[in-house]
Image: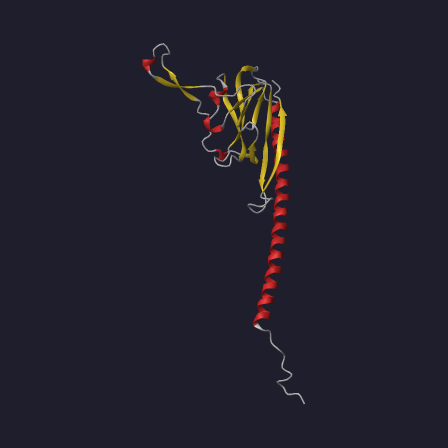
Length: 238
């Protein structure tokens, strides 16, 4: 006859418990890694969708505004629009010293910049005739990149010039001291090739060329940033 102690079940040993814990840890690590990978891909795909949205928004905005502009000017960057340079008071007598004067720093044909200014002349209405010597409106697209990464949003400033003015464009552009005050058209962008976003093509067309980006999955993963190259050309009606 078996005793009660003989029927007693055998307990796990310490070694068996350690092995079981190790196996469970390995399984958990594999499952966590798979979960993070799926999560990274999800955020990356979401970022790609946002990029497509940004591209459609930017293209629609540029098509509507640039097509109906009379002409354009491109400046190197939004934050150097003070446009002041030291100028001799009297070039024939340097001893009279220097003063500061507003200067047109817009780029020429074949050059690029991060600040595009679309110019609209006075159109006229039922009470007065059009005056193409005066400027009535400016729409400014400008990129505000991070000083370290060079990545930043594209923003827009729509400025009514009231009353309309015959001053040069560079004298009508306001200083943009706080870019965050203006609406974002593209969340993140990065220039390519020339280092700037807007290219002056023969003073007749604007070529926009850059990378549109969105934050994707986990930092340092292959899905950390989603990006797509953006190329678009538009010509003001003149």
